[in-house]
Length: 324
Ligand SMILES: [Zn+2]
Image (tube, rainbow, N blue to C red; front, side, top):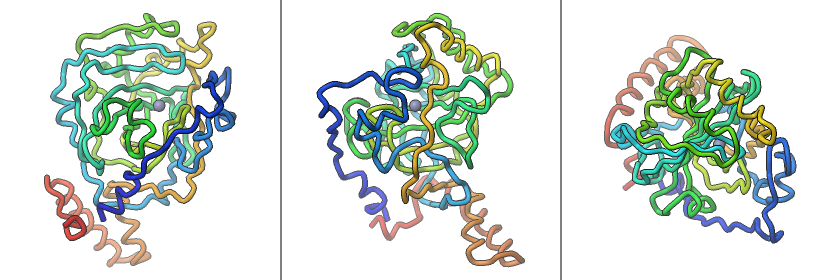
């Protein structure tokens, strides 16, 4: 029911990672590396860390995970953005702090603040999340904060203060929408360099977003606060090898070693359950009732029709009794 689903969002996290008196320099290939983050930043050793390896056989179907409402994101066609090299990633900050995302099983409204990337030196690694033990060439994270807080930094140590949309990126055809960012990467070839675009539409980067995985986890960089509602979309983004190489080139510049293979490895799941709204996962519910045969197939057929209907409705009808 709704209360139990979001009960974990009521607890307030208290950060105590500054106990050592100083925040030391973390990195991927210099300073404190990911394997040692937990020694310096206690929360990085927590029990609900990210990223994770999503084992699709263990994912549970949850019909309460409805479609996202990206209407506001689509309406904001010409947002001014600042692209920056922060030494660990390419981060794109939205200058407009009013872009709202709702739906998607989120407990309220979330405001888009920035998006950034994790990538590898070869196509077989780079993403933070894995699917059945498989890495992908890149991962894009859209970072949002709850509208109960004024910014990501205000919300980052509050349970469910943040929601991150994760998109896995594969190598394919050239992506003209990504090119608007990639064509400026050579202008931010050193740490702290920035470039501003007057008109950018984040929604243009999104693939289909109706099918996703959900779990509760953390930031994937120190302080690793366990404040994040994670969404990993099933549909991937495709960019060309040439475009991916422009990101990789940033890591070849002396002193910029962290601008490649800038991902954290999967963390233990520790009793957490990954859920999904994907219709095909409903077949696992039918499989619990019938191993094979006509009844199993009929169950799956009914499930598909039923779920397509409820997912297309604008008002939640499922579990209404729990909501009342
Ligand atoms: Zn990230």
